Image (cartoon, rainbow, N blue to C red; front, side):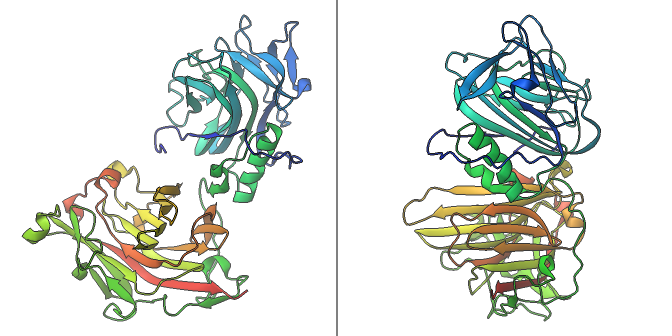
Length: 491
């Protein structure tokens, strides 16, 4: 995933196999500002050779696209995919449209394309869709953006999806760069959907994919079973009852507090009947080199659990193992939790040392799972990742396989995460995983793997390759947790 200053790109390959034909659920139309459908002959202006002169917008917004080179325009191919027509781009021409939105905001783009075996041997980078309101900038530099393929060989019908925030839309290009004629596409484009908003939920995201998948006779990819918020949180819920999750103050879940896994951290010492502090005993983790986990870096005071990342000289026996100059801490519950709602009010440390709130069970060689409610670098190099709220779910081992499967995404916050306390929640259900910030849903995913109890963990690690090397001037830095509360549904 590429973030600030570059293009966010995800190519979702869709297999033709195993898809049962169903009635189309219909394309979501709210916020649809460009809809180009090659199968709708009424939306195409063709010449006598069946070549496209204009591709009219079906969204009702009048954002039509016109061929840029009359000598080599795309050609309509009838009955090309599942009985539907596509536009065949030769690499010599594309289509151009005028500006859709001059102001900045969110955008979601989905493009169905393919390339036949007789169409390979092309330049590595080609544009499926490009927006370039700032002509002095390349379209791989925000606020310009593009969906680009680095695919030189043939591929079957696929959906490319782009989700961004804080960008204008257009002037735009289809099958080419929005400015200039470089990077023209060689292949077939079937349908283009552009929204001037983010898709609002997993259900809506799946509706869009189901519409395209059923129409173009392809299977819905696994990636369609995940949704992540793009842009600000919007209105926040007001807490009227501390005994309920912030995201469900109406108590729709009929919640019951799990007192064993909950802790307000109101004492002067950590409750060691409830928590284990990693101390290099047995086969437990010593930390991420070069920072060593040490128990004295985990304390309770002022109503908070405090996990400190510090600079210090370490004993020689640990230096020989690769730990040097830095220490941190990890605490984990002695009891394991299962389905329920996990909520912590926390403030990440203001350094490149990580702050993490996660669930894990790695005590068995054939059953190892992890769900990261958050991993945050509070003060990263040039501030590049200071607003990145990282969520992930890892499957490390099962009785059938030791293949590592990771399913994660990033919500980009409008504020620095280390500047203040916020409420972070995670709803673990048998069929669904949901992440919340300040009571607002930021990520939703189907649950294909996580059906085993896990411990709750808070820790800090040295992620030099991810968040950068910590600046010693920022140390010691502290990750503060005001409380941990865990509820279970009673209905």
